[in-house]
Every structure is written in C-alpha cells, then in structure tokens.
Image 1: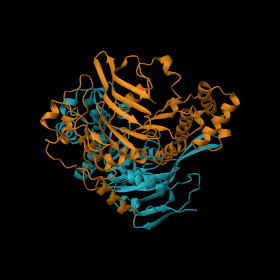
Image 2: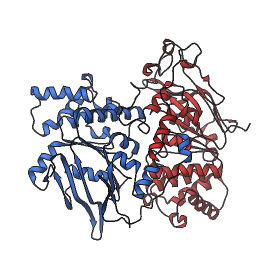
Image 3: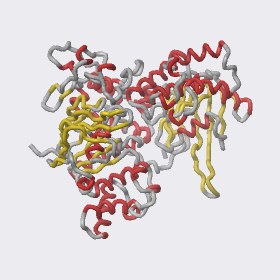
Length: 292
Length: 345
C-alpha cells in the first residue's frame, strides 16, 4: 500500500448497544483515507457521526466492525495503537472546556510531553517549544497566564500549540472555529492554512460551516446517518455535487450577497430516505453513494 | 409615511459594575418600520443583544438607561417600570433566543407552553386557546400538530424546538420580534428552513423583526436593512444592498473581507487586527481607530458623526468627510460573488 497514507478507515463500524433491542449505529461502514500533508474536511449535520468518526480515528473508541490502518498497520495491534496515540493529536471546539483552568499556558502546552514521558527540559524540546509558540501566534507574555485570562481566539491558539508540541503526523480538529467571531475565525483559519502549506501538517478538519471547509480542505467527505455519502476533491465536490443530500447541503450555504440569497432555491432532502450500499466513482477520486 | 414600530433615539445603556460603568450601548439611533426585517451584525460584546433586551427591559438590576428614549409604536416606554412592561411583553414584542432548550420548560408539553402565552394575554376559553396553539404549531411548520401538542421539548430535534419557541413567541401576536442568534446553533439545512419560515411569517403576519446574528450570510438571506455595531455603537446602517455592495465603514470592510465564503482559495483571509476596546471608559474618538489601518489622526481625538450617504445609508467614519483622503473600498463583493456563482453554475 502507498506509504503516503497516514490513516485509513476500512468499512469502519461503531455500533453502541443501548439495550437488548436498540443499537445506535453511530458509524456504519465508513471507508476513507487521509494522505500525508492534506487537509481532509468532514461535513454533515448534527448527529451524523462526524465527531464519532474523528474520535474513532484517534483511537478513542474500539471499532465494533471494520478496521483502522495507521500507516498501513492495523490498530488492533497494541504497538500500532500506542504509536498512533502519540502521533495523532486533537483540537476541540470549546477551548474553554478543553484547557485546564488551573494550569498556566506554559504547563498546558508542555503537558502532552509529560504524559508521554519526554524530557521537557532538553534543548531540543525548548527549541521546539519556542518555534511552536511563534507558529501559533502566541508570545512569551501569554505563558504565565491562565486560560480564563485569554480571549477565545487566544485560547484556541493555545489548544493548537498543545496539539503541535508532540509533532503529530495528524491533527484532528473538531469544529475548531465554530464558536469564534468572524475576524478571529479568519485568523485561526489562516493559521491552519499556514501550518499545512509551510510546515506540512496533516489535518482532519470537521466543521458544519461549509464555506470554511471549502476554503481550507483539499478533499471533503459528506456524512449522513453514520454513512459517507460523497467523497471527493473539494472543488470537484462543490462544483459538481452528485448525491441529492450533498446538493441540498450546498444549496443551504449562506453567501453574504443579498441578491443571490433572495433568489436562491433551497433543495430539500428527506433524510428518512434509505441509503444505498455501493460507493461509485463518478470521476477520478470522486465517490458517491449509490441511490436507491 | 407609516408610523415606526420601534424608534431608538440617542439611546444609551450602561451597567454598574465593581470595575466601573460599562457603556454597553452608546448613542444608538434606530428606526424600524412595520413588516421590516433589520439585521444587526457585529462581534461578540458589541452590544447587539443588550440593545434588544433593554428595549424589553429584560435586564439585570445593575443596568440602566443612561440617555435617550425608546418608542414602540409611538408609545414612549423609556421610563416604564416592570408593572407597565408586563402587558406589553408578548403583546407588542417577543424575543427568541439562541438556545431553544433553555427557553422552553423541559417538563411541560409544548402545547401547554403555547396556550399559556395565549391565555396570559387574551380572555379566551382554554379550548379556544388550544385551537389557536395548534394553529400556531401548524404555522411554524410542525407536522401533526395535534399529536405533537402533547409532547415535551426533549422529543423534538433542535430545529423543531426552535420552531416551538417561535410558536410560543408568535402566539400572543406580537408586532415586533427580536430574534437573537436564533439560528446560530442550527445546522445549515435547518437554519435555511427556519430563515425561510421567518420570511414566510413576516409575509403572512406582517410583523417587524430585529434579526441579530454574527453570520453575515444568514443576515443577507433575511434582512431588508442592516445595522453594523461596534463597541456599543451603530457604525453603519443601510439597506442590505448598500451594506453588502457599497460598504463605507472600514469595520464593515473588515467584517466582509474576513469571510471565507467568497475568499480566493489560494490566498489568505483578511482579518481585523486586535481586540474591541473595553467599554469601561471607552477610548476618545473613534473606538475602531486602533484596529483601523485607514485611521486618520482625527480618529483618535474626535468621534466621527454619522455621515449621510443616501437617504437610507449612513456611516460613522471620518473617511467620509470631504477633507479626508479618498479611500477605495477593498471589498468588491459583487465582483467576487459573480465570480463565485459563475464557478457554481
């Protein structure tokens, strides 16, 4: 298999058994791969399983079906899982809740190293720390502060710095800009873009704001009810959506243009409709779930 | 000329806090006609919510109206006390908040929460109120209203709950509806449906709305006029076309150009540097000057007045003074949007 694939989900299933006759199929046969250096966007409505997929890919849940391959090796092997835990980092939506209020910024950023028993005081790490601080747009004056003394945008920067300190191969960002003001959102998006372009970081980027996903992602996957309904290169998918659900989702995007907005037609999609089983390739790299 | 539904004149609201007086809303002038939707945009903390809540007097004890007046349908309510306000709330104006679950009582069936609002304001029989409540549920697009009438909020999805909140708000037939980030927490497809519902309700009931949002896309969908707020002030106000296609205030430029929706994929997003100023003892001059790369020397000393650009459009920036250097707006939305639509079709 190609070496440039970092992580691959193969027919991944995650079924939560609530009781004897009720099972929640949070993820139901999702196959996707994330390549080195790309930003993979995952979109879909609330409860479609995008966050669960992201968490499963971080190794936070044990799949009930299918498999996850981390750099070609199954995570069912303990060593692979351990390596994956070290090399994948996560950023969450609510940075206020994700940062320990009783730790200073410096301690927060260095904590992952401690957890993984790495020498915090070595010259190499010190150098890396300064470098990441600069890249995340923080400065030394922030280090002694507590999260509640920072603004939302600064807190999200701290969360990003913390995820980068381990030099991860993949950063999973779950709605990292959803709760930020437009202008700060733009700064954080620029930061993500910069980290990818200049430093080759790989991201799995989850958002419900499709225009953000379009701006930042190389490839996009659309999820519905635990299934992947469409997957393709961003521009290809946005310009030639095939699945009716994708079309509906795209027609709902709001563009800051009153004339366009007043005349646009929203295509409604009945999400109760059963989904097909087979992914078809409609153009190179563009897959669509077959309709029944 | 018809009577204004809502009229704010030189309106200022402040909070007394241990750290000093927070001037949350400063000298706002605003008019809303019946059946009109006014979008209010701005960053968090710019005073958009306080402005609306203070009209309904849903404020904590440490808040007070510092100056100016509020008129609702010509009636001056500035000095009204809680007792005077109670019959007006719901009847004259109602408000819908961001999180529907905190607005609804989780233990009471939806139907009862709507009838409660009707019975409070009108002398009607319970049967009549129930009939009206079911009509309301039908109006906001809930299917099988007779069945759903008896269900508690947790049986509904987020979008459905927001529809229920709307039904509660509209049941008492208000003339004016404040929608405070009412669609922010919803999925795009659900948001689209709720926005269409708001437009439909306006069409059918002819009520006026103040639509608060930080999403300029959603505002473009519904608003007839748009007010841009910064540090407690309205810095630019005009029809939606004027604000989106011909913005004049540097802050509006900043907001519009930091949106990823119409950005070029290979470029970076623009953003506004810095943070909004503290509203305890706000800076003299233009509050936006510090973050404004087009700021003039006068911006730091003297507050710009509202410059009238057209009958409906005005902006508070010294750039519009005849002595100021000519600055061309860096955002050309029309051009970018046309390009965008071309790609799509």
